[in-house]
Length: 429
Image (cartoon, rainbow, N blue to C red):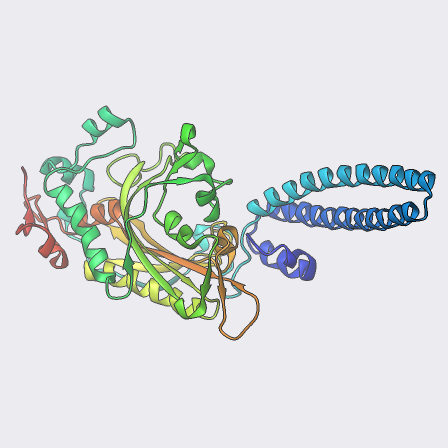
């Protein structure tokens, strides 16, 4: 969440930044949060004044008793009890208003980086690199991946639906090997600088709240209510909270981590869209790269994460482009963000395959991740950044379409050959 002190010290600056998101309801939430914060401070001042008065009366009671004035002491005790009851009423009221303020702050999105491009929707996202496309696509590449996969026997949506329901899919044979190969390729490519972690796939409510998925996106998450656990939508969630509640030394930063994990998303707001093949599914595999840093380190890390994600896609020799996310399309937690999109000629679509984002101190404040600078007093809130090093489904789909051969088989990208058990081409089973 944003620092509540900004509502007091720079409300106009916060309003100006959030206005760029082009969502009037956000400004209404901001107004309510400012009002709630004023109420909190007013109630705190009244409570503190009462506490001071109670302390002063207590001293007077002691003085009266030393003087042998029992009646005076009893009268002052009655006054102290009355003040104490008033203080309790204010304390209860304060708890309520602080709770309201906290809920509002959880829903107010991050302030935006000044360089984030202005825009209202995804149609306004500017292309900053590419597109890198071949001169033309052959007719045999213009076949949707789900048709190619069915003919090759490497995608079994029917049986996946039978065992798990709609919007689940299942790779088989060389299709499953290709999926695993993509993940290993992404992990190996980033092992030079990122610690590999295999985090839990189930997390607590507090963990999912830290990254901003809760409370706003609860409908998109899978909940295990009996145990107060949630299936992770991305490894970003557990990785961000690895250092929750900790104070790090600045010498430890930046901390670079990567993780393979399954990801679970209800896709509640996407009913009827991209229901065929691998474009939109409830469960998929992904490799995430993430960094915890100081604010000064963050800009360079954003570029590094973006470059690493791009290197993976360019290494697969897929047609791609990089766009920057405009202010009206940025997610709640995002300070600045870039997407890498791959062109799938069979679907005739640009597919988002990687999102690289800087969250400033928004997530770290929720998770209470702080750092201490050597030689300085106090602590500072860290910054977090993350990127989809490689999300399998759409890259898998793009490979089947771009690498489809005239006879209906699919060639394996060169960088994946070490992981394919000797296979160079996927042929019908």
